[in-house]
Each structure stands twice: as structure tokens, then as C-alpha cells.
Length: 494
Image 1 (spheres, helix red, strand yellow):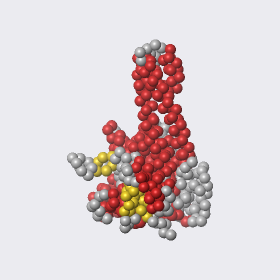
Image 2 (tube, one colour):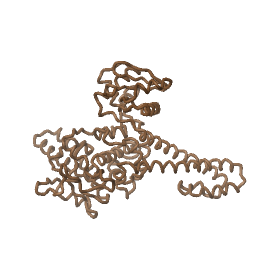
Image 3 (cartoon, one colour):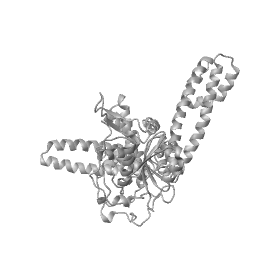
Image 4 (cartoon, one colour):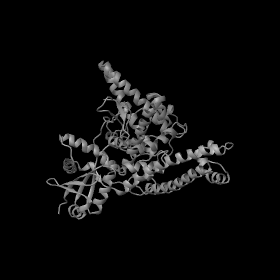
């Protein structure tokens, strides 16, 4: 028997189910009617926050297969259908139609994913509460113990001496001692729950299939890894790197109404991802960080001072691009960086060829534009080579023919843009950037020079990460080499 498909529009007190010909308005008061209607059927919902989570769990428990439609794609789908009417019944009807025509842009409802997102959000709230109670306690201690330096301690040292502070407060008769003990008890309570919360988040992250790959990225601890997982969960749900970065960061969009028409603004969506990774961005300014060359490059491009927000968004975009390709093709951090360096080298050779051709034709306008692109790619390549020089344990990616990689997808900022990995030469630990630049900028690999261990269609990859056998390096490359569409990266900065 063919499964029945319903579009479902959710509100606080009821849902609208539409099977293409008839609509049903149902609430939890008529629970048996819902169960009879949706059992062994497919229900397509739009992302609606807590209300959608509530009804998703109810419908799953009643025997339905619940799918979630991508909100942005569904909005564009309705615009394409020239839908002007906006009500619950119309949305339910077009959600069903969206599932039938664009089934790749929906995914199964996942309780575990919703649970992990709730944990990450609560983790951020707990950190704010810890800061709040610690600051209040510190202010009380500055008055109660004016000769002691409790208020001058950094956060880690301050939290370690809470027991000592509690004993001294109990022995010190002061008008503010009671209030200080109240804040101290609140702080201890939050710290206990925060520790349990981190243990649960870590447990979920370490049992995910992508944990070992993300753990190879410098600076990503278990909480940051779990934050990423909470929003992508399965990399296959994203059709390309643009959709992945757009979903994780939401980039910069122009205002479409009001007095600030066409002014660029950064969306506040995915505040968990942006908030958690901001500390990694600040730590990347240190000289011993492998990301320091990227920070220097962004400073030279965007300037310092008030442009920190733009630099952070661009930094996060570059990092998420590496994350996407590492997860897509089962690469470690060092392999993803080396892959990007090689792609930038090939893009630089392509631009050099086009620039010489434009000069021969006397097209000064085109030559000027290509010259700017060539300089931009050169700076990006130098920065990523410095990053690669700081990364330990650089390994080879299974070799592929140079004809497998085309040049029509790279963006001006040096993005990978859907290119495929092939063999590369890593910088040696003692090799400087100047030494690497003195070598030939682009070398084609002849058939006789190809390594004998290149990956055949039915051959298992020889190099694996320290993880389960099915998470091998290079997994999924054959599908990509079959001719997947490439899309030019959109620059997020104005």
C-alpha cells in the first residue's frame, strides 16, 4: 500500500493536515482521529521552533514518518509557484507539493538533534549565569574583605577558592555576608549542573560518526564539535558548500524594507555557532595558533578596529568551508588545508594564463580585473601555506587525475568551491614559505608519475583516520568525480 503524504502547518493549539484534496484541522483533543489519519503515512512540516518540535514528537509516536522542509527553500518554492495567498491551509498544501517535487530538500525529524540543540543553548545560558553570579559575588567580597584580592582573581582561580571563601564568609560578621553566601550557593549550584551538562554533550559528540574528523581540527574542543553537530548532524543534507555555510552562519543580507533599504546586515540566526566560535577567533590572534596567518590576511584586507565583526564572519566562513570538505570527503584537518593550498595554486596558474592572454589582446579593463584577482589569490595562497606549515602530520590524499579538477568554480577569495582532492606535496617541517615559492608554481602529473596506490572505483582507501572502518579517508570521491555541479562561492562581506 502506498504511503499517504500530508502537508502539515503547525500552530500553538492545532495543526492543519492537507493530503492534496482535503484539509483537516486537528488538535490534541481529538487524539484518536489524528492517530487513525497519520498512522503509516508521511507528514511534511516546516521548521517552527518549539511548536514544531512538540507536534513532531506527537506525530512520530503515532506512527507517522515526519519530515522537515528547509524554511528558505520552501519560501523560494512558494515564490516560484506565484503563491500570493498566505494562510495555514495554503501552507499545508504547498508543503506537501514541496515534498513531492523537491524531496532532497527535506530531512527526517530527529529527536536526538533537537535534544542536542537544547543542550547547547542551555550550556550558553549556564555560562552567562556563572558569569553573572561570579561578578556579583566578587563585588560583595570587595566590600566584605577589602584587604584581600578575591575580586582581582581571574575566573579559573576564583572558582577554585569558592570553598575557602564560603568558610571565611561564615566566620565573618558583616551586613553583606548573607547576600554573598546566597550568590555563592547559586554559583555552586549552576557549576554542578553545568558540569553534568558538559558530560552529556561530550558523550553525544564522541558517539557521532564525524567526531574523529572534527577533533583533528586545531582548537575544536568537544563543546565546539557538538555545537557544529547540533546544526548540521548529517553533511549529506547539504547540496553544496554554499548551502552549508549559509545555514550555519546565515551570512550578510540586504535589508528589503524600511529606512535602511539595501543596507547590509548580519542575521542573528545560529547565534550558538557564532557565539561559541568567537573565542576560537580571539585565540587565533596568538602567534602560536595555526590560524594566525589568516588573521593577518584579514587585517590587511578588511583593516582593524571596528571591522572585527567582518573579520570574524570571514574567518568563520573559511573555517566552515574546510569543515564541509573534510566531512564530505573524510579528510583530516591537515589534508583539507593542503588540498586548499593546491587548489589555490591551480587557480593562480589559470589566472596567470588568462591575464597574459588579456594583455596580448590589449584588453586593459579585463587585464586590470584579472590582475586584482591574481593578487588576491596569491595572498590567500601564501596565508594558507603558512597555515599548512604550522599543521602537524600532513598526509597524502588519494591521487586523482588533474583532468578531474576544473577551474570554473573558485571564488575570488580562494574558496574550494566543489573541487576534488588530488595528490599534493606538503611543506616539510623545516621548509619555509620562501622555499616553497621558489619551486615550480604548477606541475602537471604525467601518467608515469602517478602513485601506484591511486584509488580505484572498487578499491578501499589505504589511509584511514583513527575511527570506525566505514569512515575512511576519501570516501565519497567517486560520486563527486562523476560530474557534480559546481557553484561559485558568494562573498559574505560587503
